[in-house]
Amino acid sequence: MANNIKEDLMLFNELITIFLEDELQNPVSEYINPRDVEKTLDIKLHEDGAVDDDFKTSLKQLILKSPKSSSKLFFNQLFGGRHSKAVLGDLLAVMLNNSMATYKIAGPQVSVEKEVLLQVQKLIGYDNKSGGTFPTGGSMSNFMSLIMARDKVDLGIKEKGISKNLVAYTSENAHYSLSKNASFSGIGKANVRHIKSDKYGRINVLEFTKQVKLDLESGLTPFYLNATAGTTVLCAFDNVAELSPICKKYKIWLHLDGAFGGGVIFSDRYKYLVEGIQLTNSFCFNAHKTLGAPLSTSILVVKDKQDLHNSFNNNAAYLYQTHDEEFNLGRSSFECGRRNNALKLWTMWKAIGTRGISKIIEHEFKLADVARNYIKTNSDYKLFSFEDSLSICFNYKNFDPEDLCAKLYESNTLMVGFGHFHKKVFVRLVLVNCENSLDELMQFFKVLEDFADKNSHLIGKYK
Ligand SMILES: Cc1ncc(COP(=O)(O)O)c(C=O)c1O
Image (cartoon, helix red, strand yellow):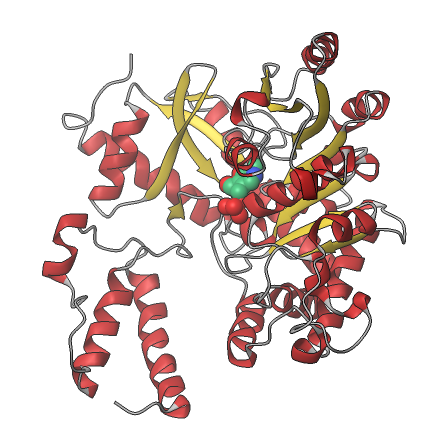
């Protein structure tokens, strides 16, 4: 088959038109047991290439059977929906295929990335010493912040390895990336303290202080706190304003992981949830979670750009041949060849402005308010979530949430997951699809209730 970009873009248009129509009619794709995928779809690769019609049929079947993560009945993950302007930017990035390492290969795309970072820095109150980058995701953003904190203790670690007993802190509700990052960075998983949270899922500040003092008394070196703006399950916001003075006092790098909830920085109404954010050493958020940008759109900003440079700069004569360091973004990124993930946020921001992004966030909080109120006023439900959270955790009647979610999925009815907090299990409805209307939200409850009530004999009961 010919390598013909124009033909293939026409095929793309044809396939994606079919897909978008199907997404409206069938918001949940047909479930296929993973062991049956190869029997159902033409996945196998062969010595000879496919002929045109077979190729098109294979692609069509594959996309129609893939989970529809942007449909109105997808509430399973911390991402959902799609903003068309961000999709446009991402499609352009694929076609342009610049790498963000140097000005020579990215040209004005460097300014695109720098402008987005600058506006984020301004929104959170960092000054002109600040910097940032677009890592591959929230896990990588957290990793980079941990490395900067480690190197801040002693830059010699880059050459000689770690000789001090470094201790990192986070909440018991933090994302699992911190444990993985501790192992990758040589800190060690055992040297991460998972501080108990209060009943709202926020780090207990007294417990944190107590643990830091204990570690100091034991001769250890506390160096890093990973606080969260929007914990993965409950979407709780740690109290940055209270944590910051303690970090300052004990010289602990304060990173705010806003992968999930950090988008509140765009909203005058909700940015109080990250009060004190300007006091952090670094902050990240994922525009692919709450803003409807395609995966991955992760932003990491750092109060002092020198820290980013200190940890991530490396000489590479074959790569850095033109222009100043400030335009060669590879000097402050993890990767060498790096996808242009900034363009999709830039196209969206350019098209709808900061005000438009703020409306997206506020709409999602509105959806969450409506969902919470519906649950609160309905005696068939038990609510586990708190105010100002995008994650609505509940149980319906006495149905086992794990079994209910599994059966909803396997019957192609609804994509929603479950979560745990303080020994409780519940359905976790995440309201991050900016395209969902209030009516469509109510449709979620109706679909869930009808399904559970009709199939009550098949769904396990929760004790
Ligand atoms: C609080 C938090 N931090 C980090 C991450 C990881 O982000 P990513 O999936 O982009 O690696 C997540 C993902 O759900 C998260 O909820």
